[in-house]
Amino acid sequence: MPLNHTLLGLLSCGPMTGYDMKKIIQASPWMHWSGNNNQIYKALVEILAAGLVSKETLYQDDGPAKKMYSLTQAGWEALRQWALEPSEPAEVKRSFFLHLAWAAEASQEQLAQLLAGYEEEVRGRMLLERESRRRGRFSPGRSQRETLIWDAMYDRIEGFYAEELRWVQDLRQRIEEEQP
Amino acid sequence: MPLNHTLLGLLSCGPMTGYDMKKIIQASPWMHWSGNNNQIYKALVEILAAGLVSKETLYQDDGPAKKMYSLTQAGWEALRQWALEPSEPAEVKRSFFLHLAWAAEASQEQLAQLLAGYEEEVRGRMLLERESRRRGRFSPGRSQRETLIWDAMYDRIEGFYAEELRWVQDLRQRIEEEQP
DNA sequence: GGTGTCATGTAAACAGTTACATGATTTT
DNA sequence: AAAATCATGTAACTGTTTACATGACACC
Image (tube, rainbow over all chains, first blue to last red; front, top):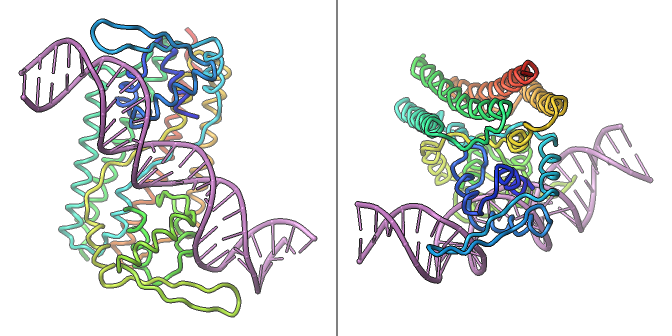
């Protein structure tokens, strides 16, 4: 189960609460869950029952009680193993294609607008990613190698949006130049 | 609902059965459903109830009865409208990142193997896409513009895998050259 | 006084997959 | 004799999201 192991991964950076993990997941561009409570708290119960994490409840004067989770030895083991498991190629969900596919019969203007709209969406997302990375993304950075890896991952994400942008710009121009 | 409109889109190429659509969806790299019966037959009931398609049952001597669906006028209208609706940027689901993120502490060999394995997966997928395109993909091609659009979509899909491949190759080399 | 953050959790709904089931015909 | 294709459909499950619920504190 990917979410469970992602939580283990986060805990490998140090003890934290479910709420902490929720925020990190929500802010991450590649931990592709909405970061909703239902899943996270359920997953925490699971990995606790499996003995992969331990729990310590901290009662605070200001605010509600925290439950700090920490990796157990078994948790470290499970994470190490999971990390090396093979995985399938990335999959892209392009809701835009579902629309574009049937838009050929629209007027030149409408099609141009559709493409321009998507271009703006992609550009916006790209800038957003870039900005939130500049402002300091979550990244363990425990070693030179880890920094290298995480930087490469974020590069790839930015690169994808840049490619997408170039693609839609190119298509847009080709459509505009069309007219037989 | 994207699936419903995708079915309308397929029917815009001519009347067909649920089974036909299922096969097209399964073979398509961007109609991102498993093409399972449950969803498709349920969706067909929906769009039939909504008056977007009409149904004609054909009893065959050899094999089971077919139900041919056709677009109604309302269906054409709905498709035309849906096609021009704006959509969000593509999202990438990278199960590989979930693993790679926590693999920094592995040995050089294990990490190299993980990256090599992913590279192979991506290369395989890329070749598969290229091959199934060469063998003739589903594409309406009703006009020059439609051909242009569908070609661009398939180009983008191939381009994505090519980028992914380049990325993992580059990372692999950087990891190998590391060693302080 | 309303909104936002901290921090936990639950309920209900929706989306999507795998597997099952039928029954004839064709292919290996 | 077994497996695949045609063609329909259902059942059970997993995964995911949205919304609800509590309660204190801080900020505007």
